[in-house]
Length: 519
Length: 106
Image 1 (cartoon, rainbow over the protein chains, first blue to last red):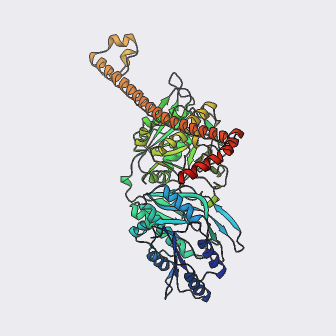
Image 2 (cartoon, rainbow over the protein chains, first blue to last red):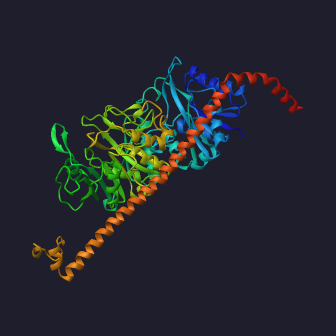
Image 3 (tube, rainbow over the protein chains, first blue to last red):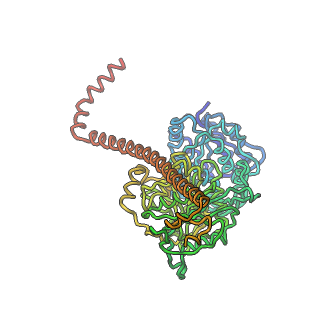
């Protein structure tokens, strides 16, 4: 039984590209492989000629010729049926793998017996063999995978897992690999990512690599694959095609009475600032906006207000006297974590959202989308797309590379971002405390926000504590919130906050598993 | 002033206290107990939170110290390996190592 079976469906590739593909496999530095090639009844005569000659040159290469053209799914499945290896690698007929690709994958697999699926970084090659568009991928991120087949090439699966899930499925032509990866990763014991470019995706006229509009049917199939994934998870969802190759999912509620109660905690001093040219009491604006526009049926608001020692408000403000708006007085020295903790402790919701007082919700279903993500397994906290007053991105999550920073800050929010990151939900190292949702039980478990930090880092620290419980943090563009970025005490890093953060998490600063590319 | 208070009003002066009925005093005592209890409970909850955070913090700090130690050991090892004395010594010992390996094979 060989270690690897490479599966390649073939249909009319240019002779030069096919020869280069063949050369790249035969040059592998790791020798324990077989190649299962399925000619899907190619009409160009050179294909059969090249493949037949190839089969006589190397006993590890097996070629099957289909008598009818069955399409990519049927041909790929025939290839899978031929595969006898422990692992199955997928290779397209005109692409190229690096000389050490199988060797590197094997080294990774030897590290852990429970790895069932491996993917690597990739780039593109043009007709002249020039490499470009290097895609340095994040570590395995099931949330991002739901919106984009970012794993794609080079994908290597444990053969027994493919048997278990039944291989490729008919009806997913063009996105059959996406559907396969979604189904495989649902069951895989472990997924590994090799951060090396081991696959070169050839761009030829008519290929999806060069023109995302080349195969429109593939994106319908991709949408179907995502819908089918959520159906298996039993989560009601609406999937929409975005820019080709990306899909957004929106949580829908069939029975609003069953939604869990959410508490929104807003710490404030009651300051006034200019928002869109008008002097506005920020907390009044934030609360009014939530009460008027939120579509979520069951929530309460806990306003943590600064008070003087005599109990009077520092900057008096008025809010509607509603049953679901309550106040908690805070008279200590400024400490944002302490204010968040006071508010959360006084709240009753199963889910809690901490929200800055200088915000304004931009999507009425923001709570549905933030809380919806928390119903998915292994998710501890979620945050929305935070936008500045002028509509640019304020924060699309936090990255620790090269140092703690907001992802895409200052970029246009109408631009899709590097590899579409502004348009799809994905896992991030942390989200901003300007708007963050989490389960109350998780908050209690990790000891809330650390009051060691006075001004900054308490939110990142909280998300890193969640990570130590194997809970991820998710950023979603389906919820949008304006953040006017006028923090009560400014946003300057204090030395002590920085030192405290480095004391706990210094080893993570400088690299980030989720922002390796240009994000 | 004290007479204007209703049965559930706060007792805020000595005159108030003197004139208060037994029923009103009992109500006041109950309210104060409840307030203190809530405050104590809130303080206890905060202490629990702070303790849990401290545990997570210490565990994170321990991880950080381990990582630093590992990197310092690696750094020190690299420095030693790059030192000229080490390189000269390695060259001198190369024939002996080679002979040892041969002997082991035999």
